Image (cartoon, rainbow, N blue to C red; front, top):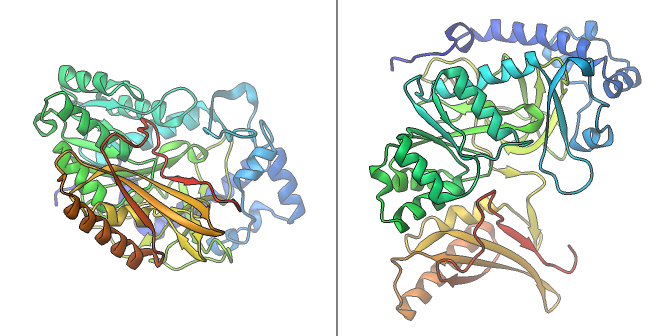
Length: 434
């Protein structure tokens, strides 16, 4: 492969040199973080000095930072720089209590925009492209994060924001959009609206799709590619780590390169908090290495993934993480079994008779917890009762094999379940012991 790079010297930096750079930036980050009231207190409590960190193993002895720590120190307890030097605040979309707030300097924003540009360039976007962003703007980082990254790249940007599918399609058609950012469930919805409008989505100008922000299977990714006639690339980001641009797939579509010049990545067992070897799924822990207003140290993301062993054929030396498998805190337990929504979806996408919308409801019936899976049929499915019942029984069988619990499965008409133009709500827990 004749790979092109946004910053070849950084993207292909030999591992030994990359780890040396990380250690230098860790020490610098700890020095900066010691100015934040929260970290100053933590460092004194644990007798931590940046000078005592001589290797990466030393660093892993430092305490974790959690979302609860951030909320408890809202709004400025983790601020390491002078507030007068800050230029922007972003926050999470949490619905209860204090939001998770990140405050940026101009340096932070410039670094972030460059990382997003690096990501977009890696999947083939160039100055000639038209990039449409269907993320929400405002305090949500997916909007401005991709906006400034695409502008840094030099592409023509269409800040369409979230929702209004018919308008999204009009923009794609009129502006000849070549690249689109959308969450997976909305990308499928957009393809459906294309068809409802009598337009073949595979004949549009779209060539590249960036997907992320909600867990999805590789089967769902391939389905989206077929529906829209695009190449779809996984991305990962979160407000606490700036937003989009933390990790991105390359043209190989085999894992997301996490930019280790700006982030230190760890995978831990979420129960024991001990490190896990490459290849094993655990909780992703990240440390910022190039943020001077509000650095975060050993932040527990709660996202579950793994480091993919081995080198990537693209030539980049930054390690790859797998797509997010779920969260250590969105797992639900039923009848003693740990289940992730992704496991359910993995089975449902195997049936061409089914649409993309489904809902898992957990209820207590006759003093027992039950799992009900409702899934919409697609427009081409049969009305034959016997065929539908056979399909339903086969879904039950495969789900039982996958999750070791026998669910109740209901096949419903297309449009019966709630539609969301934001993150899809997949689980409704109505159990008495919730």
